[in-house]
Image (cartoon, rainbow, N blue to C red; front, side, top):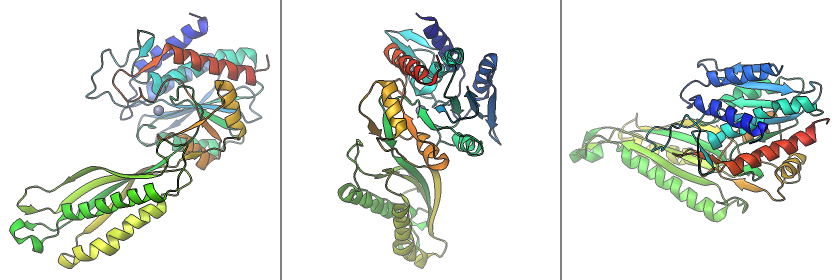
Length: 389
Ligand SMILES: [Zn+2]
């Protein structure tokens, strides 16, 4: 094992051992990274959450007078609750050429590789700066990074481009879909089911709206817009949760459900949302209110993030293709922070990192040693590009 690989592995062990499940704090991990960087003479900016003990970290290696390349990753991980793990998820376990542990591929492996290369970048001297941006609360809707973006937007010199090291098996990803989650509360009016017409059935009105959403989903699948580079070539609408009613002989007074829109980056989801709101307001509520004035719909927006849409001939894409040794690119359905960086900070982003999204979020999540090596080779080529010697 090379010294660099040994360092990467050690850093991975340390990072995975911090339980940074999104509902908990990531601050111990962030303090570790801050101390590690300061050991190499690099000062970090911590952007703390106002309410919780969580923080983003931003640091610049190399010259401060010109824009550089940002290596970006989230430090939080998804829960292991209820998952059947065959090893301790918070300890990296090597078996059959794989490194098992929560976050190994999504995405502490990438962060470990980036950190292990810090001394390499510094010893060889940077012509182009490297920015490190490590966020929190990505897995619960890309929340933490929004504060980081505010700080980046206030910097005199901002990154020229970003590489988001989400697990893509080192494929070059130039686009992903956006997402909007909506929580719906249907207010009905309760009565004995024998007197059903005197009540407003919240479950049935929910069903009518859900059917309408499903109809819209079918329409979008037929009419487009389309982008064949995505696995699912059109935007999708889907209802995933529903809860309502108390007993069969009671007309239900409440029903709650959640739906989402996953939009192609070039399709604004707002007209679709407006159409759903309009249907509820114009078609359903008049009938509900005719029975009881308080009946109706409440809509509450949950997570929303934009899609990423990079031109394949953008210089950021060309560079990442060279670093990854790839000629082609792809587009993915899953969301990342890249869309926010592109929309809110105008930073061109390309997603490329070791490990597979197929292993992310699952029990026995792993990063293969091959992917780790590929990630290191990528970083070594980046060093060749940005270093003076
Ligand atoms: Zn991730």
